Structure formats: structure tokens, C-alpha cells
Length: 318
Image (cartoon, rainbow, N blue to C red; front, side, top):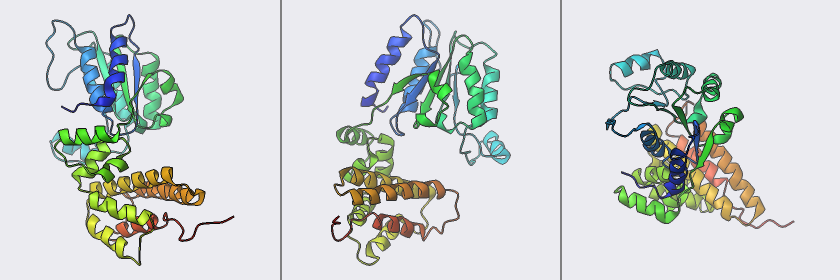
């Protein structure tokens, strides 16, 4: 079981509320991705629905409903029903909210409380968010909502206003290193730094053995490219036929290292270059899963963006 040192204050607030006279019905679990918010939501939901003297299942709980990405289409739904692999949708759809709301008509199964976890609430479709808002405005007795959010600003203001917010702070480098060791994963200082306080990102970078790639990225950002040698090495390390997960991990790593460099940059012009490169990497990461990129050329595109972030060979004078 993962021990999350950044959960101490959220647990204090949650348990204080749970022991109070009136528990708020809506909770927004806010913080960047990779901070264990879903783990917290599941554990908190179990505490919420458990009642003295009532045996609780160790597996799926009938009074905890989790809404997340479902099958992409009818073909995926059929595959899911047959226990086969299927592609996931990129949003939480209104029919999922409608199905959840139908369950709220009945009473909870084992006690007087029911928990609804939506993860991530940021990716609710517009119609889904509006439908959810109705349940948040008039929740059935004993129903509580836990909305996991990596980017709360994307939520409807009316949804945010009906929830109490629990904020999850980022982890420091020593905490990340300790958690990676606990998970049995070899840590790397560059990968940890690029994770920017997210254990999920640090775990992904380390598990993908991205330390050599981190070194190449750092060199490109620093302006150490001569010809195309380092970009070629970057492409070799990523792999000509790298799967989507590895490419996304490399893009996330590049974004983290560029963001760190921007924070440390003293020259305003260089800082602007880094910010522009970070934006370009974010856009590329959003396009890569669906755009028809040549897998052999995508690593060179990443490398070219990083080269553009390098400082000018001569300092600017005004």
C-alpha cells in the first residue's frame, strides 16, 4: 500500500468533517495529477459508507460508484461485456451520469450512505457536467460526491461552488525518492526533478528508464546540440516504434524539464523561449495520440522544439 505523505492534512479535514454534525455532500479533491487523489477518494469513500456492526466487502463496494473513462464506442462496450480489451473514451459521458442517477433512486445497499467518485471530473462532457450539477444541487439523502480534479479551473464554477475543496500539495524530491524506493523502482534525480512533485510522473519516468533521455533533453535545452547528433540519439533512445505510453512519458518529461529551466532562467529572452517551447510541447502532447504522426519522425519533432529553447550563443544587449 502506498504511503502518501501529502495526504496528512486532507485526511485531517475529511475526518474532522466526518465526525461533525453535518457532513458536506460535495467534495473537490484538487491537485496536479499523480498525487494519489484517487487512492484517497477510494479510502475516504470506504470510511464514509462503513457503519458499525455491518460487515464491509474487501473488493468492490455496492455503495461506492466510480465514474471514469468508459468504452469509446458500442464495439468497446461489447468487448467490455465479454471481458476483452477495449479502447477508452476521452471524456465522461452523459449516459454514465444518467445511469448513476438512476441508481440514486434506490436506497444504499449496506447502510445509510452512498459515495459517488468521479475521476477525473475535469473530463466531464458539457452535458455530463450540467446533469451532474442537478444532483449536486439536490443530492438524495445519504449521497456524497467526491470529484477528483487535476485542473479545477476546467470545472463549471457552479460545480466548484457546491463542493468543499481538499487541496493536495506536491511532494518534494526526497519524498518522491523514498516513495520510488518503497515501490521498488530505481530513482533518478533528473526524472524526479522533471516530475515536479508528482509521484505518478516520477514513477512513470523511472519505470520507463527515461534517465538517459532526460540527459539528452537537458543537453538540448542547454544548447549543446551540434548538428543533429543529440536529436538522433534522442530518437534512438525513444525508439522508432515506441508505443503511445512511452511517447507520452517522454513528452511529459520534456515539459517538466523545460518548465524547471524556465523557472531558473535569468535572461528574460531565454525564459520567453522556454515558455514558448513548453506551450509547443503541451500542444504536441495533445495532438500526438490522435494525429497521424510518423512514429519515426515524432522524436525529431520533439528534439527540434527543445533546440528552439536553447539560449542564444551571444547574450542579448538592449
